[in-house]
Image (spheres, rainbow, N blue to C red):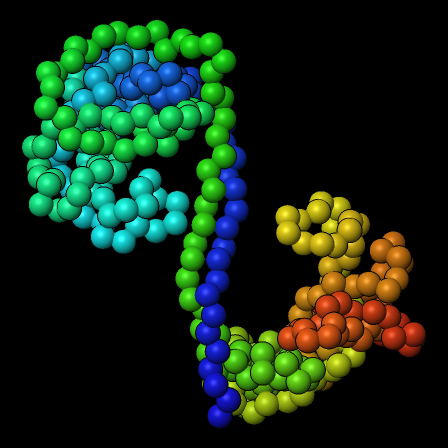
Length: 313
């Protein structure tokens, strides 16, 4: 049996969002070294601020400036910081109730070791040298033994307020494709497209998943499909993807390989994008050293009859 494959995989995208008046004031305040909270009708001060009272759901806009000092309410030691975390050396994750606030703010505490942090420890904000209007304007917290500072009302008005943020979302994990997909990938390395046949309905699935999605039974019989196939549906891509060196417009299509009962997707090239059509017969084009087809191109055969692929749309 071929080796089951595994590889690190990263899924990442930037999430862009606009800010309401409260969050805008909070982040702009951090840029100006001011920590803002919001006061509820019953006198509680929430930091970070929210636009609606979590208890009553009433809208709240009464901003106050709390102190950049506070008290650790709970903590956890992080011995091995990861990419993108506030500090590159071991640190403590802490919940800090800033002086004047009734809720706690999560951030990093820079201390030499876990013996130097405890619940009740007094701390203060260490501001980042360069601030842009983000939570990272607080570089971290650090121990503090000075006096408690007063809380004051604040209008929340600043010059050039921050109105939107880009929050990168990223997931790092190790992907193991399993027996069926490992065999499929090994086949692609030999420029062969392998599917698996369901022992019940006899359909051939490419790529295989190890079980029939219709019958729910295991699939083990391997069947080589293609290499030629038929375009069933397609779309014209007009927006250039980051880190993808393909000029727009181009066509991405579902392709039913000969002998398969499930269409896979691939890029269509070797033909003007506006001439791609349903029923077009195509074949794979491989780049030197590639583990999968770079794209599919027309074979020159007559288009397939609609009835031969209508069930695969």
